[in-house]
Image 1 (cartoon, rainbow, N blue to C red):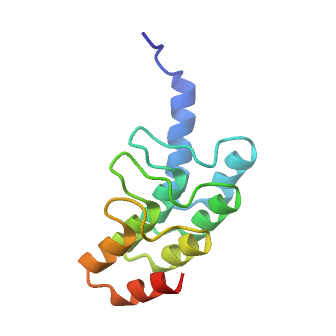
Image 2 (image 1 turned 180 degrees about the vertical axis):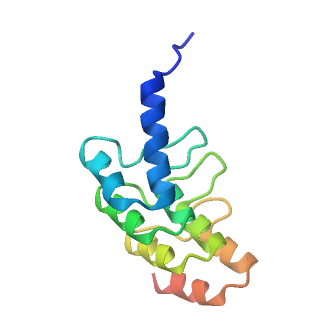
Length: 130
């Protein structure tokens, strides 16, 4: 039987995930620089990069990638940050993820599949260039 998580730890983690969602890059990276894992994930497997990407925060994505976060961390549903950014139409985030080494073919559905599904030919061209 496992112990219940420390409520203070849960509260801090919730705060950090909210910083990623809101794109509060400076505060977010101060936690990462202080030792919070750049690849921290929530109870659904969403990483800080996934949350920042899905909510359109390219600066936060770049900062996390620069601190060692994985560009292709797959969540519990098999989704990648890049596919999420394609779904949301976040072009600057897509570019940041590609610059950070994201693989357009990773995940289910992949960013390529998502772009095809939504008829985003310009993104398919962009993926081909990477």
